[in-house]
Amino acid sequence: MAASAGAVTRREFLATLAAAPSALATAAGAASAQPHFVRAVYLSYYGLGDRTVRERVLGLLDRTELNAVVIDVKGDRGFIPYESGVPLAADAGALGPVRVRDFDALLARLRSEGVYAIARVVVFKDHVLARHRPDWAVLDAGTGSPWLDNEGLAWIDPFEEAAWAYSIAVAREAAERGFREIQFDYLRFPGDGRLGAARYSKASTAEARRQAISGFLERAREALAPTGASIAVDVFAYTAFNRDDSGIGQRVEDLAPRVDFLCPMAYPSAYHRGIPGYPNPVTHPYEVVRETVRRMRERVGAARARVRPWIQDFRDYAFDRRAFGVAEVSAQMRAAQAAGAAGWMLWNSRNEYTVEALRPKGTAAD
Image (cartoon, rainbow, N blue to C red; front, side, top):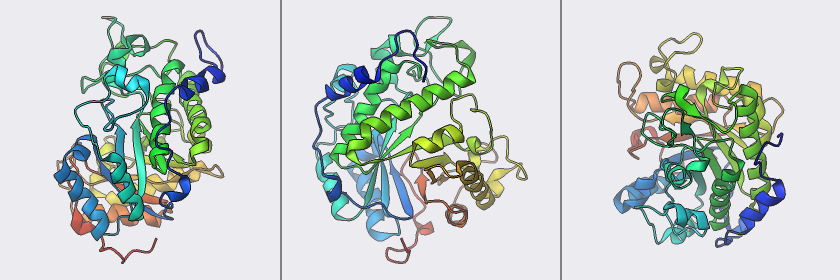
């Protein structure tokens, strides 16, 4: 990646990471092995903090075919659910309303039960850090204040290399605590809101955006290598179909050599413009997921990445508001496997899942 004014050298970057206290340094060998086919459920930041919700979700891992869980370690607002040792986390106010004091015991429990633990780390959508360090934020060209997306949340400027070290330090801490995979989300430029008012520290060209995302991943892989953790990145599902960067810096051919897993958000509802052959995707959940995985695998080619989609377990929001029940959720699961995916992950922001779509524990081959 070409250096720019104020760019951080690799040596300076790694020195910043080294300044953060080491976490519990759980030995990689003590952690759960990676399943051949991941069947995961998502546990949100606030769901993690609510013991009733948390136990309801984790109970599914005891009773059903699920063998993995994706846990918010740095959520959509930038909050971290445990007492992080990364200095900037406390300084920025990222140790927010949820504080799971038995977090390490929770991870130990998951390891003992053979559950594959994935840490979701939201990168550039970080309201907390952007408010603390507005010099790192995407700015509003009209006001000079941090720019806000449609949810009213501020973002970190992906061109600000000095800010990369923070999310990577949080990720490394999570890996040292025992997470076997780091899943970076919102590793992209904003895609909604008054995009014309968003001002970055350099010209937001397609090439520059792609270089920023690739550069972050190169730094992350170098920093996480000693932990042995795999690296995944969540991507817009349309990246499977678009040959450009979709205006957000995500392009399959750039990402695939730099990660272990590409995780398209293959929700039928997310394809608001339809896909070739399926103008109304919510009526064809099987075909939509199958085609997303197939196209993305085709474009990955000989690169290292495997494809593991997020699938929709929530009501449609883009077409006719239909509920997604057993038939729709099961169809997506079957499609992912038929298309050669490395697994699937259920998404519901309220952590309310269609349990009837899951097979009982012991009935699914790994």
